[in-house]
Length: 425
Image (spheres, one colour):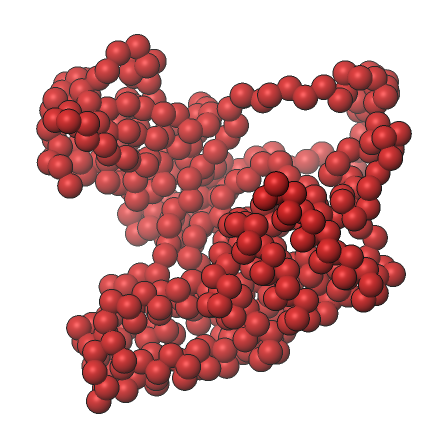
C-alpha cells in the first residue's frame, strides 16, 4: 500500500444522515474508544464535506485544520474504521494518489449497548459503573399508562381516496436515510490459532492456507466460537498427512453437525459474529431481515425451532446449501424461512434444493433480494386484476398457504423459474 503523504488528495462521502443525537452518542459512547483525535477526525470530515465538494483537498489541509501529525491521523482513522464509522478506499491515477472516505452514522445508544463486543470494550475502557450511568442517561421516557388515547387518525383527517391517480405516481426517491455500517466480527484467525495451540499444541504452520479458508467458511455457516472450532479441528487432525491434507474435513463436518444438534444447550459454543444493523423498509420488519442476514443458518434454524434440537438431516441440508450451492448465509436463512412458510413447516430437501438452484442461477446474494424474488414469483403465480391493483399495494399481495398441496408447491417452483427467465430476458 502507498505510504500516505501530505499532498495526497481525498474526497468525502456522507453515507446517510448524521444528526445532533449521533454527535451525543459519539461523544459519550464512542469517544472513550476513539480517543479525542478520533472523535475530532470524524467531526472534521463531516464539517469540511461541503469544502471537499467544491475543490480537491489534500491531507495537508486536513492535518493543519486538526493540528495533528500523520501518525496521529492514521491511528485515529484506523479506530474509526474498526468501529464501523468510516470506510477508506484508495486509487492511483498516474502519479496522483486519491483516498476516498465514506462516513457512517454511529449506532444509537440502544444498539451500541445491545452489541456485546462494543459494550464489553466500553466497560473495559471506562468501567461497569460509568457504562451503567451512560445507559441510564440515555433512557427514554416511559409511555403513558392508565390513560385513553384520543389521537386523530390519518384517514379521519385527510380522508385519502386511494383510487386517485396521485397515489400511483412513481417518484424517484433521492432522499438520504439513516445508515450505519456493520462492524465485521468475522472468523478471528489469531484467536483460533491461540486455542489450537493451547488445546492441542498444534502450530498454525501445520495448516495450509486453503484449510484455514475452509475452516473460516464453515465457522461462518455454523456460528461457533473459535474455541469450539479449535476443539473440533483437533479431533479431525491427522498429523502424519502432508501439508494441506491434515484435516479430515468429512470428519470435521460430521463433528460440526453433531455439535450443532445440541448447540442450543451450550450457548458458550456460539459467538456473535456481527453487530445488528438498522434496515429500513421492506415487507418484513427490520429485525426479521437483520436476523436472516446476520445470523449463521444453524443458529437461525434453531431459533425458528424455539431452541430445540436440530435434526441431523436439517443440519446436513444447511451445510450443503453453503458448501455445494455456495449460497450466502442471508440467502440460506431467507430460503429456509420461505420454504417453511409455504410447505407447512416441512423442510423438504428436494424442494429446497430446487429453489436453491434457481436462486443460484438468478444470482441472488442477500436475504432481502431472496424475499423480493419470492414475492415477484408469487405475484406471477397469483395475478391481480387492474381494478384490484388500484386498491391493494404490492406488499399486501401474498399467497395463502393454508390449503397448499404438491401441485401448489410445483406452481411455486414454476413461478420462480418464470421469474428467472424474466430476469434473463
